[in-house]
Amino acid sequence: VFALPVAAYMVQEEEAHAAENERTFIAIKPDRIAEIISRFERKGFKLVAIKIMVPSKEFAQKHYHDLKDRPFFNGLCGFLSSGPVIAMGFIKYGRKLIGATDPQRSEPGTIRGDLAVVVGRNIIHGSDGPETAKDEINLWFKPQELVNYRSNAEKWIYG
Ligand code: ADP
Image (tube, rainbow, N blue to C red; front, side, top):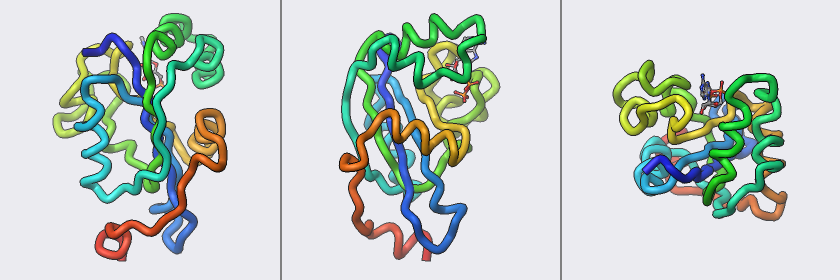
């Protein structure tokens, strides 16, 4: 279940409420794709970009460049590049939905708390803030791969 990486990626729109408009990059692993996407969708996040790819080791190193001095960097990049990654862009950021880095410390109800066990296989990556999200979006997507539209949820969830 945790053998292959999948990336999910979420972006947001420029609208009135700044906090609601953060951009996010999310990475998830296969076998749980539908369940993980549905958690963001249920919360009212807007999917604006999605693709599947197998990142090279070099690409994974770029993605995790800020962790290059950590002892697990090589294994982490090997894991990310070991299979398909689904990259998705959503509008609205959901770090709380994801849970803590270590699934053992993630609350039940979070994605990692419910679906993951081991820190090196913690099922999902989420950018840690709007600036990182911007960089990660630029790394994983071309500008024309981001779709601009108005979702039904915007009216009823954000007001
Ligand atoms: P997060 O993904 O929660 O933002 P970090 O950015 O600190 O966490 O780390 C990136 C990823 O590196 C984690 O999601 C996890 O897969 C892996 N990682 C973090 N700490 C460890 C560790 N001690 N051992 C192995 N892998 C780790």
